[in-house]
Amino acid sequence: MREGKLETMTFIFLSVCASACLAQTKPIESTARQQIDAGNQAWIDGMKQGSTGLIAATYTPDAVD
Image (cartoon, rainbow, N blue to C red; front, side, top):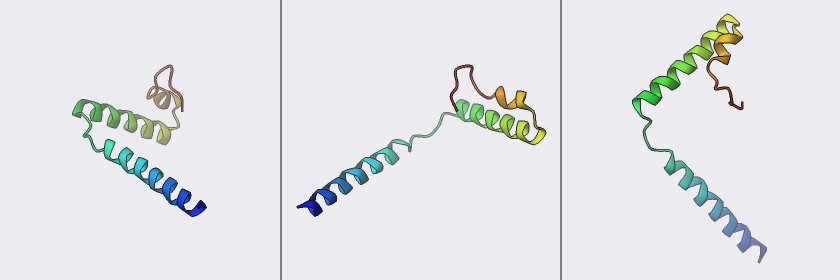
């Protein structure tokens, strides 16, 4: 009896994971992609230069990391 429950729970878990993966296939808008890339580059530059100002500028005031 326990084996049947485990198989059922495993099937449900994998189904939920698969549906989450399918939901992520939508392409990102070009303006959003540009903003993401600019933020990532500012973060990289800040890390290389040791500048916390550049890194902090990539976050909004209410951001949680």
